[in-house]
Length: 574
Image (cartoon, rainbow, N blue to C red; front, side, top):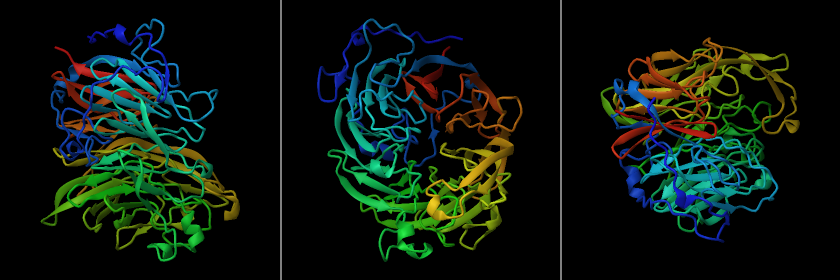
């Protein structure tokens, strides 16, 4: 294997840690100067937002790495990032007296241990610099060799450090959220903090993971919570951090749309529906389209028998006003914690002889949906989870109706999928070349036991026990989103050599080289043929923790992916 040399940059050594707004200025990274209008253009040589562009496709037009050349893909560099205020990272290079500058922010205690780094989010690459996150941490790395340029560490008050999905970028500024619900802006050149704003109430046990989405002069952020609370998204001013508007995903007052689908206002306004993953954006309609989470309580009675709008739904809001244009519910009255917060995908196709602007989502409940993204009109609903067994019917509006005998019961109900879902948070991908929607499909079974039939004692995710009892297999699955038909399934091998385990890593990437990149349960990073699903190349680097990205730099296409705290960049060297 030929490896690109890793260069030691002495100018970055032995630099002190600086508190936010104090001490010497960190060494500057190149100015990103990302005009927000750039995000409305097709994805090029960089990767400037969570999904690459606003469509959610995770599709790159780069072709240097294709079905033939991918066999020559080799490791270009690695970089390990270290959480906390003591520096770290840098691809294993020696350090003489220190490392790249660390800026410390946040108001939490000094002695609270840092959560070990785990890169589940999407790195951005702009102007030769990578921006990488883990809960409470952000780093800038040189995209050529992984050299760390600066590190920002947030001293947390606590909360749930389950993940951080990445940063948003506007001109020369970065934005990310912390587990204890602060919305932080950094100078992209230095890593110094510009300001921070509390965007959700820590005392109500909200927690934050979403990668902010930048749209013109709006920065969109959503909430997460597993306890009784309302979900919402907010739009912030990128200069000041002031709130421009807030949209609640559940009814909050008398007269709000959807209130008649709840037993009363009290149950609605504490009913969940958290939008904890990034959505997509249609510049023509000015609609931001996103998925919402499950209703609360998740597994027990107390929500009547109504649909519990707008939980487990696709929702479209006007990005300038925060007003809802339409909504489509994928799991009316969900009873299994099957969030529909997954990032959807925008595409165009001809349906019944008519060109349509569409949005599709593969939901956690094992069903696939396509709707008109302008009007919200239902186009199709199909089951993509091979073992999915919880539904009784699909109504005339395309919503899936549950079979109550598959709800958690005192004697137990054997149900597929598990609460983890057929897919969870991992982003799918779509290729305009093959016209296929790619998603990880997991077919697990659980027995759901109801342990507390009184909803007053079973807030949030309480009141049930779940016992995993097996699987019929996990796959990389290709779906025709205009018909819902499965075009092919490629089994993910399990770590034990069988085909019942997990796979998919942290999501998918597809390219014009007719490739799909994913991780499998054996610790392999794999390139699949996008037309057939045949694996062509792999490298065993450990459990893949995020969706790969690709970028072109100095005439060479890089494929970048993370396994826990380490990033791996692959490229072709002649």
